[in-house]
Image (cartoon, rainbow, N blue to C red; front, top):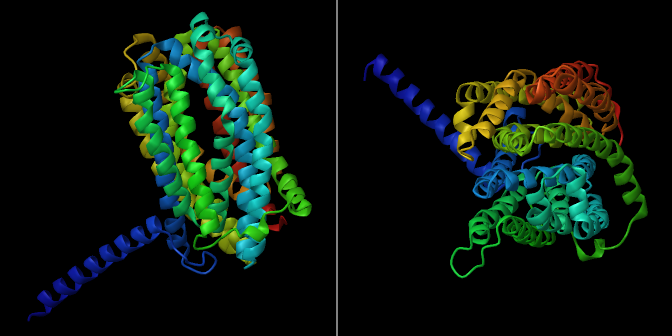
Length: 479
């Protein structure tokens, strides 16, 4: 055999080995790995955690897109009902996500310290807190749904027919809260593959039940927009039951025993203290969206519908970016627990680069195909125009947004949830909301003025957060 032929064979074998290795790692990521994320190669660690988190969130956003597709067949007012209800759900999400940040940070820190029993006990206390928090939202949704919608400027159709959607979504919010918290437990422990499978199950049922209950397929009654909410509650309820079964059965990194089922005031206090910053952080961000939607609602249901559809498209396309960002939270928490702050920081820069590259690609798609994307969900010309404009404007900020997502999750994974809260307070409440009103109403730019104000505020907050991350104070936080 000639030397040239030998080199060709070696090269082919190396490429084949590389492909086999990548395929094996992909299978490990989906199946779940028992790897120690404080020891293995950082690129591999990011991959093993990010892949299931991305797939988990893609399924979540797939459901959001499918849901709005079927609701869209009921008209602009039905889509607006979903959008207005979600402004209140955003408040619930803000609490659930803020609490999740604390839970992920504390669980990750205990796993990094090799304290698996303490991690399991912490998980139980987090579940107790989640159930308690869901009660006031359920009461508000069941008894005051019409009043809540009227407060947001809902039209006559929504107040007469759409309020039942709000009743179901807020009344059954416990399943949403528990999905957030228990999956945060699995992610913090490094069992991201379990969190992925749970959401695939929950949202798989949602996707199947959505058309069945909305349109009344087969023996089922035609429930319209109310059917969408019932489908969501059933699907997510099944997801929560699956989570509890797997948590007690035990994953590769965490397990809850019956002996852990008791209140621990010290741990509850630690979770609440750590979560205050996260909850505040998310409340500031989410309530700012309530004010934004209230401004947009003054321009009619078509404006709300276009914005709602665009937001669902954004949720779908951004889930891989959030998956990578969530991986950072776990890596930062576990590596700080293992006393490796420099390794924690390197994980942020590696993931940030991947995130930026992905979102630049998404931005190009938004800019070129904005109208085509929105027209999938509606044929109303004005709704398409508004949604497409929002996608084009937001595409300009994605270069910075990718870094902002990762840097923020680094703070949260370290347990420093207060710093992002302060940042959000300034940029969202003191800049974004007033600027939106001024540009839309005072300057007469209407809905485009709101979109440009959001672009300015979120680009600015991204640059400032990255600058603050580089200062490194987050490495010294104790949880």
